[in-house]
Amino acid sequence: RNWTVMSTGCGVPSECAVAYPMPYKRVSGFGSANDGAAKFDLNQFDEKFFNRLRSRVMDAGKIGMYVSIMLYDVAAFSNFSAPLDPMWGGNVFNAANNINGIHADTNGDGWGVEFFTAPTPAIRALQKKYVEKVIDTVNDLDNVIYEIANEVGSLQWQYEMIDFVKSYEASKAKQHLVLLSPGGLSGPNVYTHATRSQVIGSTAEVFAVSIEWADYLDNPPANNNGKPGILDRDHVRPRTTFVPMLPWKAFARGYHYNLFDLPFEAHSVEDPTWELARHNIGAIVRYANNTFSDLSKMLPNGDLSSTQYALANPGSEYLIVQPEGGAFTVEMQSGVYNSEWFDPKTFSTVHMGVVSLIAGKNTFVPPFNGSAVLYLKSAPPMEPGHCQTDSSYSATGVC
Image 1 (spheres, rainbow, N blue to C red):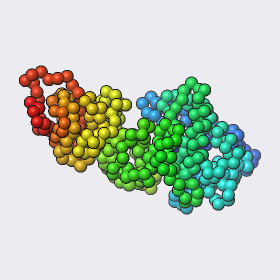
Image 2: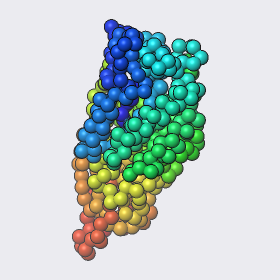
Image 3: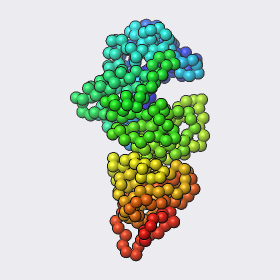
Image 4: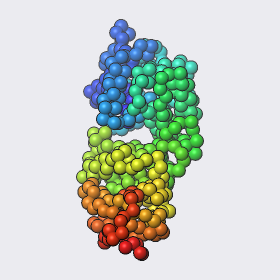
């Protein structure tokens, strides 16, 4: 997730870090911005910013990583009390920092969120010019998703920007997915949370969930909406201690999982479960990309298992998540299956085998204590007399 912040910081260099470069050029002869350096000309792009953007996306692509390019972030227009994010003082759309007389805080309340909620014609033109420049910079690259904005409460503005991105890319060599986040800041300490239907029903192809919709920390509802959904911890209580099995729960319910690294915030401290989380997310990526025959056919189907967490292409492949530990049942089609157990505590595959299972409920007992993941994949029928028994499985008439 490529965070883009239209602010150099709080505008006080001695107190806040100064981000560099900004998308716009600084020009001399017009006095100093709040951060002490030259002001910005919003009619001139700084190619250093866009060259760096392109370079980072290309580097990510070399290791198989998609980049969600965040076009805007509402925090840059906020004016919270320190030590939070009083970023408006260093924002390029604050008239104190540009030579163009552009000031997003049109109602004079000290916050610049009208950039999204009530943009002037001049600001709308600048928004579109910037989005065009971003698209021109990376359009030829495959590993790109466009996120309209992070936690912006103005839904109508986001709808319009989704359509603008699509229309501008329509005539270009490549078209990319657009991501819509689930609402956020719309005024001084005012949050407007978009509903699930408002987000999923948009023309964006990808959506991020909101903790306001459901209990995504403990029991995420299945994603059967026909659109990729991201359970991004940024929108699901990111400062909460890591929930150990949440990446697997999200995966089994049809979501992509995005960890919000605590070091992103300097005052935050991780406990060891966060590193465990990263290893389990890596395991999920391996199952999705390398183990499954066809990820697109692996659909969330909690009714198949007593655990209520299952991805399955019935009769072909099953991935069952047992968050609590202990025996569980799975409704199977009869056949022979290659099987393996994955231990989330050690992030390792600990047992593999071949089993013949009956149609209907089969009982499975993890070969270790605690949370477990079971993967089953159909295999050629066993030859007579070669049926394998195993204490991890229990099914009437197997052998």
